[in-house]
Image 1 (cartoon, helix red, strand yellow):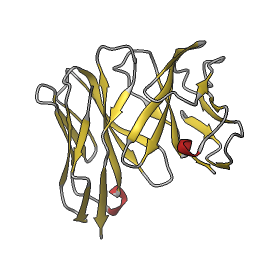
Image 2 (tube, chains in turn brown, green):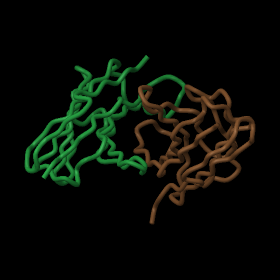
Image 3 (cartoon, helix red, strand yellow):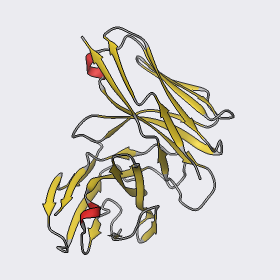
Length: 114
Length: 115
């Protein structure tokens, strides 16, 4: 089944403890991105990647890192999580790098930073 | 800066009713508009994608229209069912700029269809 998977789905952690949220897609998509969803603010893009080893900042990149060493994986790294990073995170992928391509989203990761 | 607004914020209807969800955007220079469904505890499911050159798309009981020049889209749901209850999100992909592929989302419409 074609899909975008994320792990973990739920995570509770403490301030400053490094964590990684994994994202993987099995559709051979070139484009991948991360969003966070917050009440009243909607979904906002954190980082995106147009292909292997090509990443760039979205609207809210502060406090996050990403890497794209393989086409299928696009992990989101929080080096020193803070409570304001408590949010619902979504990974998305798209067949190409053109902005007219349809995007497919993962199931989400609910992160709580205490 | 693109802004997307969805009206109403919440909608409650009896089963079987036809309904319309509205989405408006401030910058008409878009590549496409995508409607998503979000269920509690689950991800975003793509419902319909309308390219900027298209006027409408249909999938089953869903029909989405796009009027790019006026910055508006509507999602029409025919013969609503309780299983349609979810949050519906509208998102646009902007032409130009450097953030390729970024979607700008509306706040969503929470739909409740009661039996």
